[in-house]
Amino acid sequence: MSLSSSENYCALWSVSGLRNFATSVLRETLNIVLHSSKIRRWLPKHGIVWRHAAPTLCIKDPDKEAKLAATTQAPVSCDSSNPVIFEDEVDIHLNPKIGSDWGLRGQQRKVVTPGQNKKYFLAGALQAKTGQVTYVGSASKSTVFLINMLRALRKLLPQCPIHHVNSR
Image (cartoon, rainbow, N blue to C red; front, side):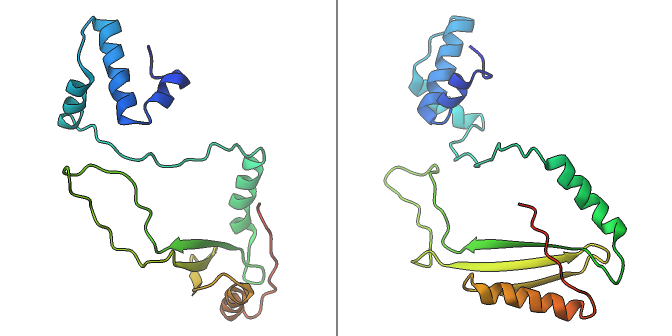
């Protein structure tokens, strides 16, 4: 039994799956039989804790190399009349996502939340040549939010035309 097979990897997504996996590995490789509750008590003593996995995308972009080359080349070819700006936006969720964790029996951990899922929106631009950052924030994601970002860029670079290139 190996960790590399996808069937075994999927079984590790729960504590009971990890216990069952460890029990079967010990039984098959070392001919040792341990009850799963013994494994459950042993895991935390050796630094193995129950946590949620971090979601990770495995989407391959066929144009990744070309995009990276263009992104690397852009700052080299820019000048004061044609600056290169890298811009991005983020949605900040103010209501924390609460997952599972360890705790004492009969006591539930309390996490203070704002009540409703409030969000804050932030847009920022990095001037490639100088490293200067400009940003704007808003409580709502609207056309006004985009216009405010464009106004901030216009204020930063009043003499330059603004061209938009979408990398998506």
